[in-house]
Image 1 (cartoon, rainbow, N blue to C red):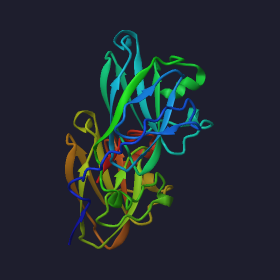
Image 2: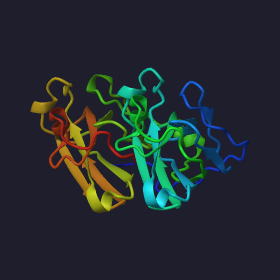
Image 3: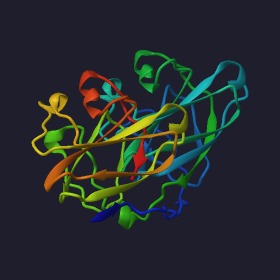
Image 4: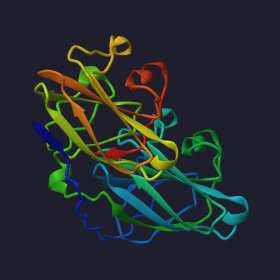
Amino acid sequence: MALVAAPTAAEAMPAATSAVTAPGHTIATAGTLSMGGTISGGGGAVDFWKVKLLGGDVMQFQASLPANVCCSSNYRFELFPTTTTDANFPQTSPLLDSTVSNSTKAVVDLQAAYDATFILAVCENIGGDCRGTDSGQGSNPMAAYTFKPTLVGGGIKATVGAKETRASDRLAKAPLTPIGNFESGGGQPVDFWKIKLLGGDQVQLALSLPFNVCCESSYDFNLYPPGTTDTNLPQTSPVANVSVNNDTKGVVVLQAPYNATFVLAVCQNIGGDCRGVDSGGGANPMSPYTF
């Protein structure tokens, strides 16, 4: 019996056209970012907005930066998880970041790993990420800049995206994912779901991976047997394992060897299987992907 997961084509999500939102220089004062308008920033150490996205949405910024950026400046655009606050900001890694340098006009893409209201942070002349502003790094105040945010990819229907089952990075909390769901992941070292299958069932996953996967990334999709826990994962071999390389669109198949509720694990840049994350291997956080 063949079971097919995920739609094969994304349906465009219309961009909102509402009032331009000024940034907050703290997360507590961050306004909500709207798509389609031209946004102005600068004048503080870091700019914050809140932005609501569905898993797989690709948000593109057409940025217009100061004239001297080609000579001396760089700007970082970063997405932080929805739980980020001013208090825990220094200890919270960004899910995604993109740096613009040596250009006064630039295009930046950031993709949502799951359904959430994220924190968008922008900073200037930081050697690491925008958390450095908390210890006095970067330009303060930042030079003025503008950008226009639009949705250019992903953009599934809200009714489809609402059915997403967000993965856990702990086996003990792995949710059950139904066959046929659109799922998205990334933003953590490993994603775990549970999936109920009969012996011989073949699960086909229609994948959409980051644009840079063809150059530097690989993804592993593993099925682990029932009874796999956070404690015994390092000693437990997957019953099925498939890797994806050099392709931003792909189809993989995992076959169940018997009737069971299995653990579906996904990891990036491991070079083996997802047990490697237990010893610090792989990308952390993973780049966003959908299936």
